[in-house]
Image 1 (cartoon, rainbow, N blue to C red):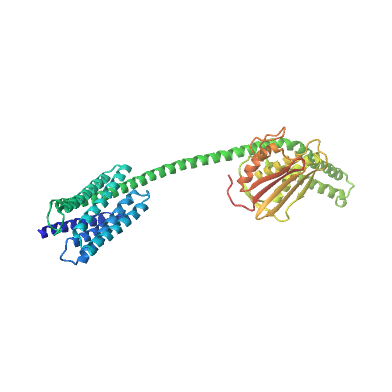
Image 2: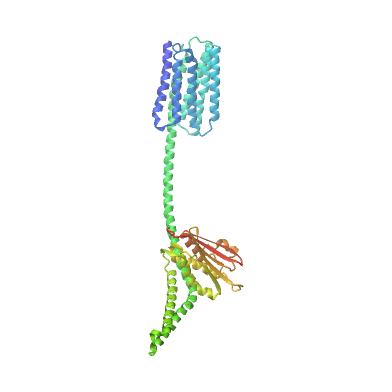
Length: 496
């Protein structure tokens, strides 16, 4: 009979090893610490069962102490592995309780065996302790079932109940016996415990495998859903990118149209001044032409010695060149507004615009102070658009003086190179900007002028920023305004 009981216990050990080894191999691809812990702990319990089935063939030290220690380690590892399914719910307090209970049990068991030689009491303690401890399998399964209803959680609950109840029955049967002469002696409660062990171990291992695969499948589905959402977001971003590109193209066209519109509007203000300015060189051309004609008609004059002819020709050439310069600048400035990128000297650009502004400044008795950087300030950009910016700033500065202004009207223009940036400042000593609109001067259709349209400064800001630059200002009532434009030197960047 001893052999039959021991053989049965060996069969339990075989179940331990086979099931945990199979799970280890089946889930090896996941490289999970939880799986390794569960399987290693089960193998520790299997080795403990081997020693418990070999009393008389191994020393009492191995049978009582090493086997108990291996069984404690095995159960502790499986409990920890199962509770990892409950994460991220905190488990530290439970792990500490496991440790204290296991240490306390082992101390009591060693005391009963080593000091009291009370094997009957130790066997009752063994079965009762694991009956209580293994009830945690059911509790863990119940928590998992409440979190998400699954077959694995139900199997774990069933396995935990069977394991705990059959061990409790074994403890009750040993207690009723009152003594024990042979732990392998067949009995009804031992039979129930052995059958329960087979069923519980099988159910718990299947439950662990099932729960692990269920969670892995949920993670795969979550990854698939996330990938789907990512693809959807990518599609939305692509559509938004296309829409943004269209908006930027529309913005470019709006700025181009407003540039043309602003040029057209500004042309009227320049016509009156330039008509008078162009009249002067044309009049000089006419006078000198008449003089040359008179001299040529005088047959007695010695043409090669007459200094009047040289003076007339020199004046004619200068006046003609002045008229050509003015007309060329106007042609460039009032083009069709299409983007035309080139490299040019910023100082020369400023001088060309100031030449156009000169009649207006003279008519309004405004002193102009110009201080250009002596070095060549080369930049890459749309020359026509930058002319518009300078013209807008000069126009605003010349209109900063009311009719009742007392004192000397003054506008100063300066260019300089600061930290690889071209800096243009246009300052006036006029009345300054009204504080009520100071924060809105660069907004479209914002102006404090009776005849203004609120386009110039907004357009200037858009042009400067499209050239990777910055524009700002400082102002004070009755003390004037200073606009500062910073542009990259010889930038090769693309513009809107």
